[in-house]
Amino acid sequence: MVEVQKGLLSLAEELRKVEDLDENVIRIVLLGLDNAGKTTILTKLALEDISNITPTQGFNIKSVQSQGLKLSVWDIGGQRTIRAHWKKYLGNTDLLIYVVDSADRKRFEETGQELAELIEEDSLLGVPLLVFANKQDLLTAAPASDIAAGLNLHTYRDRTWQIQACSALSGEGIQDGMNWICKNIAAKKK
Image 1 (tube, helix red, strand yellow):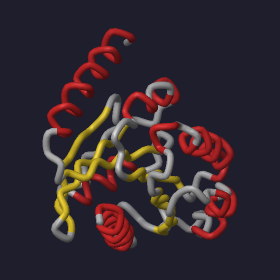
Image 2 (cartoon, one colour):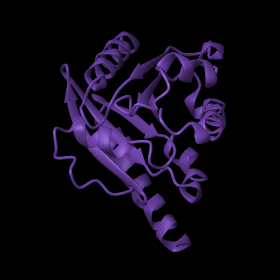
Image 3 (cartoon, helix red, strand yellow):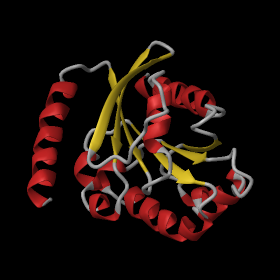
């Protein structure tokens, strides 16, 4: 497993070098705990079929066009063993998307701790943050406002941030998040 992870990190480094050659690409890192819905959101953004999603064991990279912007979205697995390597993928990130399973209340504290640690990373200083409060289609889902309070988003004063209620399965709220991303990236690029 360690050799596979080292291999994936080497591959990621090579892909990042190729990506850096194109200044017009917006680099987005998509993170969150396992089973939060990251890959489903990315697959939906790429306008692909979401019926056969499996847990991400390393990372997925997809290019997505939105409102004239070319986005390179890095979806990195959220299993505990992979989270230790998240920071290795953060260099040159233009925007962080963090996905929360709104219905998994038992893991709210864990997801909050992971996000707080990410926000402290030097490579993410000032990087805009979009939190997708996913799985809003479930009756047990906490409202986005409760999740924002629980994650202490109001304390993040060094960056713009937004929380967006969504359902990766239905697609509801995903485009609203993309609109926010495009608006903030366009403003940052000026």
